[in-house]
Structure formats: structure tokens, C-alpha cells
Length: 172
Image (cartoon, rainbow, N blue to C red; front, side, top):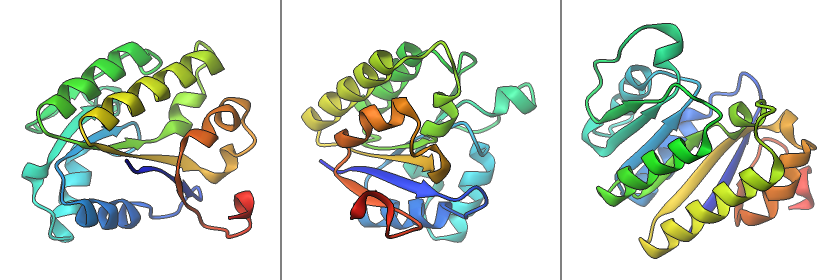
């Protein structure tokens, strides 16, 4: 099972990296987004010859900027620090066949003080175990400036692949 962490700079266009992974895996995608609207992601995906039917969204951004989304195959979440709700929605999407999970981004979740290291570790371990059983894969996007965040440092060993803007990170 691939468990990839993409490290990005603040203004880095990481969607191209994400779309490369989507094309390589040829799986349907459960896209958890806190950064870009599903509409934007779908428009960008289509420009990269990825059909919109391959996507299911767990949408944590649209509710912040407007009242509703017209995107098919999506569910809006309003409690961004509720890992149980996020986990439940991811597992429902994966069970429907969306077995490549893109989480954009772990940096957004790390800002909530209500989450602690134990809850983040439990979330990742449960998600990874579930995906392993269903032969799924996961990609987490993370701002490179969050390296050194205690919660991220506690969970980083759970990933088995890194895509990074600077080769010197992690000594890899």
C-alpha cells in the first residue's frame, strides 16, 4: 500500500503532482479538500485528461466560502477538526470504490488545538489499516513549513514515500 506525503511550498502548484499520482494509480479518487473547491479541482483534472467521474469529494472548503456545492459525488463537512466524521466519510467513499485517498491537506488539520498527537496517530493508523484491507492508497499533502510540528513529526514515520521540494529534507 502506498502511503505518500507530498511536501509543498506555500505557493507551489502541487495539483500537478497529485494528478500524476492519480494517472499512475488508475483508481477512483476520494479527495478530501480543505484548500481548493471541488469545482476547481475537477476543472483542473479535466485539463489533465482525468475524467470527473473518477472523483468523490469530502469537501471542507465550500461551506466556508459559499452555502452549497453543485458537485456530484461530494459531501460537505463543517467540523474540520472532527477526525471521526472525516474518517467515517473517507471509509464510506472507499467502500464505494474510491480507493485512492488524497488528503489536501494535513497542514489544515494540524492547526486545530482540539486535535492532539494521539488522535492524529489513531486517525492515520485506522485509515491506513482500512485502506490496506481494501487495497487502497493514500496521499497526504503537507506544507513543508510544517516539518518540525510535533504532531507531524510523531506521525511521519507511518508514510512510506515522500515527494518533496527539497532533497535535503529527511535525508532521503
